[in-house]
Length: 84
Image (spheres, one colour):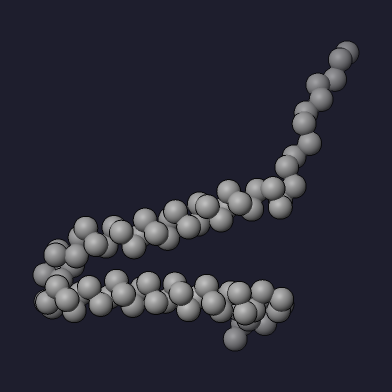
C-alpha cells in the first residue's frame, strides 16, 4: 500500500504577515464604516455631526495608544499584563 505524503505545515513565522494584514484590514475597515453611518449615529445620540465625529477621532487615538503600548510591552510576559 502506498502512503500519501503531505507537505509539512507552514511555520508560524510564515503565517504572521497574513495575520497582520488581516488585522490591519479589519481595523481600518471599522474606521471607515462609522464615517458612512455618522449622520445616523449623531441623530440617534442627539448630538451634532462635529461632536459625533469626535467619537471617530477618539477611536483612532485609542488604536494609536494601543499600538504604542503593544510595542513598549512586547518583551514582557503577557499574563501579568492581562491581569493588571
